[in-house]
Image 1: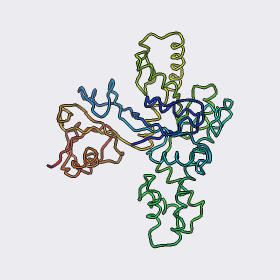
Image 2 (image 1 turned 30 degrees about the horizontal axis):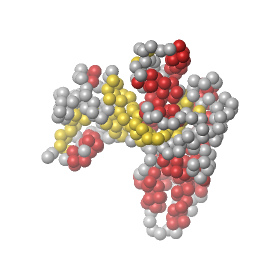
Image 3 (image 1 turned 90 degrees about the vertical axis):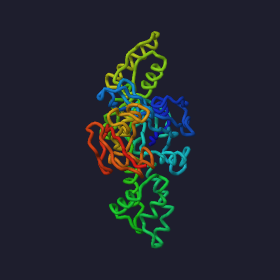
Image 4 (image 1 turned 45 degrees about the vertical axis):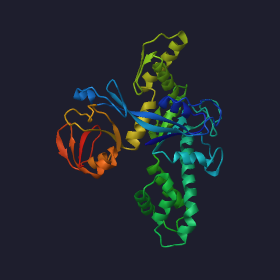
Length: 386
């Protein structure tokens, strides 16, 4: 799974990326500081079953801290987009191509209104964040439309190949499914005679389905930003302060504060000088107002709300909740919400999926079949043939 951080220059997206991954990416107010995508690993945060079950877990593919399980997800920081990118403006189509490898997009918006559409600094509150949201969606839609238009002359020749197969082949690099393409073609009545406007409507729905977007309303700490946030609250935007999260993560590394990503507050445990103390007091005031920095909330919302993923814990020993080496709750796997027991078996290993016999819900001890739909937090033991 991969999340893409996107937005225009100077909105704070690289700060968001660094706060989420602790990758030391270059941060500045120069346009196009990010040219090649930054790659890193972030984490979703969920409650670990260890305390509920009274076991000492030993995670292998994730981390458990104070009963909170942090499950890794890939993250990519895309260079800043400008209006007209689909036509090659700015750094152009290469960045739109990078976005398409992601399962979901985190659109970091400068909610303080202090950067214009090209990413240049302007007076606070003079840029409308609603327009930033619209411009990203428009750039992606018109870029995808351009891909379809390349194949459209072939569609209009009526070669006998189904239109859904032709468009799916053209869009296959965008990680779309044939069923989704077929459904939206039928829903929108797409035919060889469809106009560009009708094709754009189809693309807009395909993009929303295939590349869902969550809005990170960044720089919420800036004076007046809360009023601009009200303009986009209805979009599901989450207020956040990436700088505060990054400061907390770095202070935690240095042993100055005790903080877990997603906590609503922190504890000072080291010696801070006067400047550091004043900075932490400001961070505390932001967290108190918005119940945290918002960064972890954005990541969790992207994975669980937008993509509908669940976390499942596969084990071998049903009573000890462990693998064959005795590691309790060793792995936490992210799976689509509609996954069943056999899907879990394949996620563990292809051979286990192919040789699946049955599974056990370790909490209840109940035997479950291949088609049994899993729930978030399930602990499951798979029995496979040899």
